[in-house]
Length: 163
Image (tube, rainbow, N blue to C red):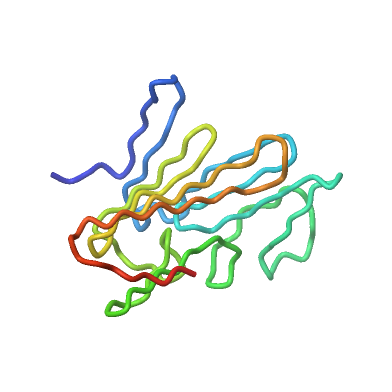
């Protein structure tokens, strides 16, 4: 059975969530998280732009081709050196891959990007491992909180290098 490209649903709390089942079919799909001190734009492939108030809006990482430092600019294309948050996973006998998708752009056994009201997460399975990568913003601080949970679905012992 083929999964739909995206699915919109509500949680038990009544919050909306959007699930995207491919990083390839809609590569520029983005969502936003914000609090009083920070706004973060998150792409399904892992590209992230955060703007925080200090007291004026400012970015702590920005695209190299952006000369002006204004609060909101038109969306620009993503490229190899674009700011992002990526985890690199290396298992001794298998090739290196990156989470959530970019910059290595490895296709996975399954991929799901889920945007909720207060968090964004990816559910990825690859080489018998299940990864849940979650991003939340602190409530009253300009901080990104990232969490990576890994589950081994095989019976074999695995050694992973995570960068």
